[in-house]
Length: 270
Length: 83
Image (tube, rainbow over all chains, first blue to last red):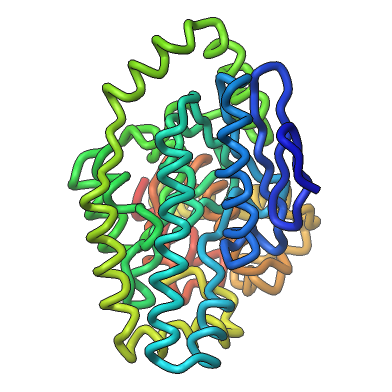
């Protein structure tokens, strides 16, 4: 179902109320971002042209207990790389990345104040989605990670340029090069998260923040946002090239295979 | 308090926290038990446990240091080393 004001999809839904667009993620098992999610995100990006006329804030959150988002759908990525030829798989990956970059750039630059209300797992592509937002409000049980190097890849949805835009390079290197996950308190200490709230309180706090944001003149908020939050387009483009270059290596296929076929209780740990 | 006493206290707190968070009777958990089996948790829930412990003890536990750790006692040793 698609209308300007609300949408109920298989991976996400949105509705607008009182100047606030709320986009909920709800694709089991943990909002993995694959072709279905991308299609629905593209619908959302198109609908934003209408939605943003009457709104001042966008809130992204997850309805699933496991967390905000576990990142890219690695099972789908692996299956597609197995069923397509090498060249076709490589083109498919580039096409997917370019499409998701368009969506995230649209959210990043939206003339709204955008808030990611996160809890639990906020990994890889999930963290990259949150990083496209202006503010991250985190449940104290939220956990952040860029695990891509474990697979022989780098984050591909704009993670490095956006993290580098927002934080000190030392922490970017720590997160990226160790692949370790950090909790919400640490994420707030380094400036990634703007507010840490109690368990189950992230969405409520995001709504309270939206109510505050709505008090300000929208044009002034937009001017301030454009001044302080440039989109690092050149680096984002470079990131796609590097990702595609790495993806062609056989070590990546081996890493994906290992992850997908793992029966280990700790596949998320290095 | 001696190091051994502190370590035992840490271990006891881990068992209590884990039991409460995953709704398992505290008396069913023992220090040398495999916590994946005892708590019936998967990898994502393990991250919940890690966050719970970090928040409680106010430490950072890099997850790569926990690779291969499966029992509560070893987990307590890892936390103790960061207190």
